[in-house]
Structures are given as C-alpha cells and as structure tokens.
Image (cartoon, rainbow, N blue to C red; front, side, top):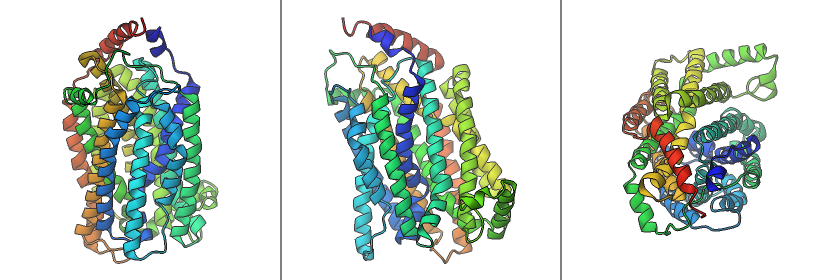
Length: 484
C-alpha cells in the first residue's frame, strides 16, 4: 500500500547515498560561497564590483531557471521516477562546468569577463538542473516526520564534511599544487573536487528510491501549481526566509577570507599556527597548514574553519533531538538568535585576537549547525501542507520556488558583499584602513542585520509541531486511496 511504503523506515545506506548528493553539490556551492569572490579579485583579476555584478546577474538567472526546472521535474516520467534521473543526467556536466568556472584563461580583461560570464551562467544553469530535482527528492523519499528529520541530519553531516574539504583544505591545496601560481592551483584543486562530485552524484542515483507520488488523478497544470504556491502561506514565509538567510551567508562567508588576510595580525597567526602545529606533532606542516613558506592567513583561515565545521556537526546532531522535543520552528529560532549574537561579536575581535576568532567561529558554527537541516525539512513539510490543505502536490515546483529565494539571496548577498568592499575602497595589494573597516563590518554587523530579518520572518511561519503530526497522519490515510 502507498501509505506503508511512504512511511517506512529509510535504511542508513540510503540516507548516506542521498546525502552524498548534497556533499557533491557543496564541493561547488561552498567554493562559490566562500572563495569565488576572492578568486575573481585576487587570482582571476577582475574588480570586486565587477565580480559582485556577475554574481547578481548569474544568480538571478539561476533564480529564473529554478522554477522552470521544478516544473519540468514534476512532469518527468521515467522508470527511475521524476527526480532521480536528473541527478544521473547532470552528474558529468556539473563536474565539467564546475571545473571550468575556476580556470583562469590567458585572455584580455574583456575576454576574461566574457569567459567568466559564460562559465558562471552555465554553472548556475547546471546547478538548477541538478539541485532542484535533488532537493525535491528529499520530499518523496519518506513521509514519516522522524525519518525525514533523521535523513536531513545525515545529509547535513555530509554537507559539513564537504564544507571542511572546501573551507579547510581548498586554499592549502591551491598553494600546494600552484607553488606560487594560484591560477594553476585552483585549476588542479577544483578538478579534484569536480571528479569527486561526479562520483558522489552517481552513488546518490543508484542508492535512493522515490516513494511518495502525487494523486494520479491530479492534473499537471503549471498555472494551478503557481496559484497553489501563492496561496500557500508557509511557502511564502519560507521564500522570504531563504532570501534573507542566503543574503546573510553570502555577505559573511564571502568576506571572511578577507578578514583573515587583511585584518588579523600576521605574526599572531604565525605564532598561533606554529603552536598548534607543535601540539599536533607536526601534522599541520605535513598538509601545508603551517610551516616553512606557508601562507599563514590562509592556513589559519583553513584550520579555523575545519574546527568550526566539526562544531557544526555537533550542532546538527543536537538539532535532531531538539526538533523532536521542541519542534522545528522553536529550535530554528533559537539557533538563529545564537548565530546572530556570535556573528555580531566578530566586530570586537582585535587584530591579535586569533584565539577569540577561533572561539567565536566554533560558537557560530555550533549554533548554525543547529539550524542547517531544519529549513530543508520544513520545505518538505511545505510540500505536504500543499497536498494536505490545497489538495495539490507539486514537490518539484514547491522546492524550486523556495530555492529561487536561495538564489535571489545569493545574488543580492554576493552583489552587496562585493559592493561593500568597493564602497570602502578595497584594492588588492593596496588595502587601506578604510577598506579594512569595511571588511570588519562585512564579516559582522552587516550580515547580522540580514539575520535579524530572518528571525523576524520566522515568527510568521504557521506549521506547528501539532500540525506536522496531523498532516502526517491524514496524508498517510489519503494516500491509501491513490492506487485503489
């Protein structure tokens, strides 16, 4: 029966297989979030405002592509389901384009801009073609709320591990493979990540199943899909929340590497990393985090992010238990408030405060780890709400519509982050005290303002813990009749 299938337990193997798909996407996504602005300004060779404008245009195009892809995925019919085949079909193109987006061609400045626009827009396109079906897949693997929470917890542990690879190892790998040529280093590093991403996508396709299907009698009307979105109040709330959440992430994460390179005191970072290296019996030197000829700013940045992501994994683990006890909304609200506090506190870090930076990054990542899986599980609840309240299930378009908010947030956040640097007069190798102040503000106060709007928005989300359970039970009963 459909109800017993949809609410059955998901094996740990399938949870891991599903989660590797997000790990794969994050080899590219985290690089875009964390390093692409500095790649474009310091390696590729374009200005911060040009990079910010590119982000705005490219990511807005991604926001247009998302609902188109959601509608296409909802109407895809194969023996593998609606969403899984897109992960298979896009795996290799995703890897190739992700690699090409971090190549620095020997072109004129105009030629470089053209190359950057072409590769970045292609990357946003293939990302939509891959990630919208992948996101929707999470809504049809199981209808059981506890299993869904567990699935998302495993997913975001894997995301954290992929993030460690990018935040912790990418810059040391660029330094190691480039040997002074960062363009060469980025090419080799991203080539490795692209190959791993492609392999992970294949694993996701072969290990997952689609269990929840819409009512076969439901008409496939795009107009009705869009009308149901507008009438779905939880969807509207989540859309705004995702816009502001990713404005926050794009501004903060995109500027954090500058915080280490241009604000924190280099001798203090060298002393800090050397002491850590001694405590770990030379382990850091072995992987180019510290030691002779190391870039201590990037090394400290990488080490701090590795430790921070380990804290995020602990936060994710705690999150699952908290959501069961207090519900998604209350747990998410608490995590956001703590994240805002620890983000804003970066403004008080002195240039020599390397240990304070590490502590704040640990506290922030633990708090953010509590929040990481919950919005995505809420997206699946929003798809359930549409089926329950509006008698229409369009999983792909629901997820795509909310991911549009993500893309708009990234577009605006990336543009704002680049604009802040430009307004404060940032120029590579000629960084003024005014530019440094802009970097400090863009790593603390400005993103904290965006996160405050996120918190206010969340207060209007109406799916409570009791409503989740009611939806689960009534939808399971409704699905019994789908195949009669």
